[in-house]
Length: 127
Image 1 (cartoon, rainbow, N blue to C red):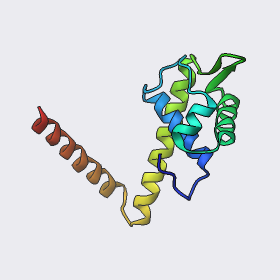
Image 2: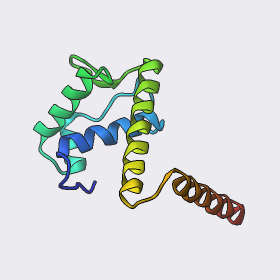
Image 3: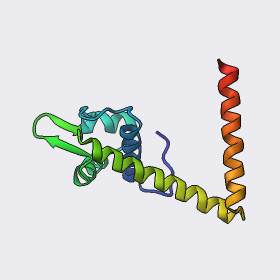
Image 4: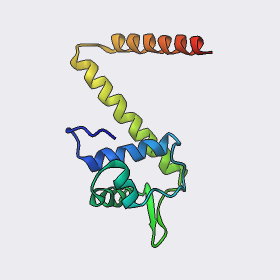
């Protein structure tokens, strides 16, 4: 994983795990990698992963079962709330960036529609 300097590493890892959960890459109820294994995989200090898991547990995204490991919540409502929060943050960041570039609502919608047209065209070319 490539880390950027604008956000603490532990927060970037939390965001990555949340994204993987809401996208279904990590299913609800699944056991997460051990602290040591994830630290090795991401090339970070194990204390960083401990902090990540503690934060995810505080947010009720995950739960730790003593002696068994850390597991993703099985509360589907929690996952939906988390997904909506991630989407809201992404949209907010996008709109704020476009406004800084002096785009108005109509320009932004036009750009989005053009991008979807390109995506649709790529899908047709693939199939």
